[in-house]
Structures are given as C-alpha cells and as structure tokens.
Length: 493
Image (cartoon, rainbow, N blue to C red; front, side, top):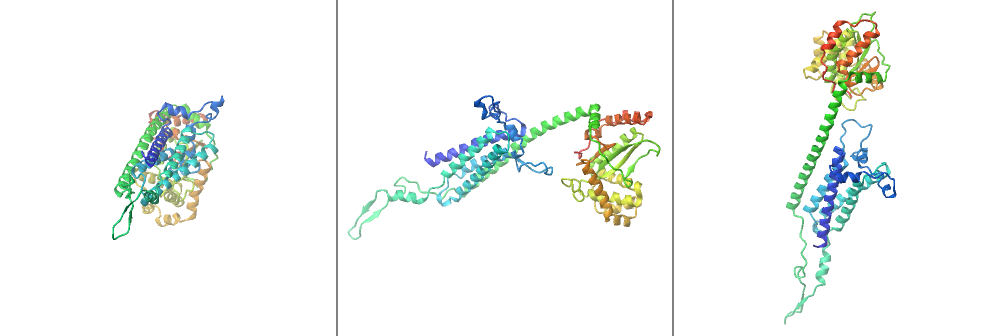
C-alpha cells in the first residue's frame, strides 16, 4: 500500500469514527440516551474526590447538549416561536458522512484536476473552524464539558491533517525521476548519437490520469444525496419517538390534573392578581339586575381563533348558567395578527385585526348590543370554516341592519384602531401571549381549568357563598349534566 493510499484510507476511517460518535451524541440529544452503556459512562465524570477524577469531574454530555449552543443557530430567549434550529450533533453526523463518501468516491485527484482536492481542503478547514469555535464555547462559557464532543473535535483536526497530506504531487517530481533514470544511446553512420529517455512505464512510474472522471463524480454526488436523505429519515425517526413519548407523558399529566378539581382551584388561588380596568366603552354581556352582586370575567380573545370560538360557546352554554348569568363578561381584543399587534411573535390568524376593527366599528354605531351581534356572527362564520375577507364588513352590515357607509368610515378611523391597541397594551401588562386568556376577578384562569366544568362549578359554589344566597337548583342540575371533557383551547399559551 502506497503512502497516499494509506492516508486516504486513514482519512475515511477518521470520518467514520467521527460520524459514529456524532450519531450517538445526536441520539442522546433527541431522546436523552445514546443507547449504549459504555457511551453513557464516558459522558459522566467523577465526583472530583481524588486527583485522577478532577479532570473529569465536570464532564456532563447531557448538560452540554442541553445548552443553547448545542443548536445552530444558537437558541435565544427572545426569539419568536417556531424559529428553526438544528442540533449541532446532527450537522456533524451529516458532515462527516458526506465527507467520507466524498473521499472514497473522488479520492486523490490528479494534479491537473487538483481543484477537486481544493474543494475538499476548504471543506475540512471550515469544519475545523467550527470545531474550534464550539470547543472554545464549551470550555470558556459552559460549566460542563463533553468528552465525546472533544473527541469529535480532535478527529476533525486529524482529518484536516490527512487531507492536507493528500495534496496531489506535481508532475515535475515525476519528470525528475525520469531524468535521473539510465539512458540508452543509438548511433548511425549518417546521424549523431541520439539519447533516448525511458518511458514512465519503463521506469515503473504510473502516468498521472485526469481523475476523477465525470461519471465517478456524478455517482459520488448521488450517493451523498442518499446519505443526506437517510440522515434526515433517521432524525425524523428519533424525533418522532421522542415526540410520541413526550406527548404521552403530557397527555397523562393533563388528564391527571383535569381529574383533580382541587389542583385546578389551587392553581387559581395561587395565581397573581391583576388590576384590569373595565372602561365604560368595554363590551359587556350580563343578565344580572343592577342591585345584584356579580363577578367579573375578562376574556382576551381573537375572532378568528378556533379555541376562542369554542370557549365562547362553552361560556354561554355551560359556565354562565352556573352563576345564573351573574357573571359580568367583558370582551378585550387580542388579535394574533402582526398588522396591529406588535407583541405577537407571528401572524397566526390573518385579518384578525380587521375583524376586531369591524366589531369596534359596529359598537361605535350601535352600542353594546351591536358589538355582541357582530361577536356572535364572526364566531358563527369561524365555525363554518370561513376566514375574514374584504367583502365581510359590507355583508355583516347588511345582515345586522347597520349603516354600511358609516361602518366603512369608522373602519378607517384612528379611534377604532386606538381602541383595539389599548386592549392589546393591557393584555401585554397582564402577561397575555395567546388566546383565549381568561381572568376571573383579576386572576388568570389556567388554560387547563378554562374548559373544565368541575372548576367552574367550584367557583360557582364560592360565588353563591360569597353573595350569601342559596345556589339555585337549576344551576346545580346544569353543573351535574355538563360534559367534563370539553375540548380545551389550542391557542392558549
């Protein structure tokens, strides 16, 4: 085996080793376990009680893989939800797998096509730069370090050295060998002596080929695409396994919490109390008489939010009757649309701002009753699967006997936009990030409790005790017949 062939084989073996370790790190990153006991043993260091364990006392692969720097780009606390991130271990797996295929397929090109090797050299140098960066972060910014990550960085360095040694030899070295070979002379009577140099084959030197061929490069690229597809499929399998396990745990936890009304009530009692101002222009729905005591239920909602529609129906059909309609239901706008809501991370419901503007314009024209008519009509429209388009304001005005000209004029007014913006600012101060967000007497109702009729039944018991009245029998019967597993909100935080 010649020296270049040996170095090429060594480079491929180093790539295989680095890809294998990266695969184990990726599995541990996604599922929490690499699947191998010997791998996990190296991940955990000693307790630092003796000199031999001090170097590994802070070794903790799990802690390093849980840091924001274990993703590319790194995770940030203030980033919008849904920002894509890739585990660095997965990128390493793909990088070393592709590099190994490239080194096998393209190999060591001839000097004439040395630019192929230049691609390889630039590739591995960029990879080494990434390794140096992550090694610096691991030892300079993190409290723990990862032995397997360090091994990958070392393997990356060795790969760079090997690839550098594989640079194609220049042809003049071969020419010097030919020139130094023995020569033979021929003479004739009519011509002087002619010196004949031996051919490359005669001196045992293989002539340089214009390698690699186009077919070989194409085959290599095809195999690389297969490797990328396989790596992606493997990542999807690992992620789906973790997602399924996490989902099962979450579902079990939710069911356990929802089955325990005392837990939901305790969460409400421990919640922070907010001073939520209820203005004279706030839309209010209440059936109580002026001399009757009530509780305030403030709902931050979005007319295009399916969960808001479901909660509005539950509130009207199941929750309010528990209090004999003596809940003062106050509507506050929080459209999940960046057109008017600068606090939302992204536009979840397009044209939600326009829907809020229509409801407010109707309120300016027809008062509280007109607002709630538009409120119900917009949620009915959402139930049918329709969104909200430019033709809807005129259609709604015609259906609800509103002045269409005035409605369109109010839609363009700064007062309507300012009214919605005021609710959005208030929601921000109350920590609202999703809809529906419900506050009972100033305290936030946990999303798990919002749709649990048992929680509202207990709140109703408190209400009737507080006002010093006997709870009406009709509310008790309704509470007992309510469905306990009503679907909960999906847009709530």
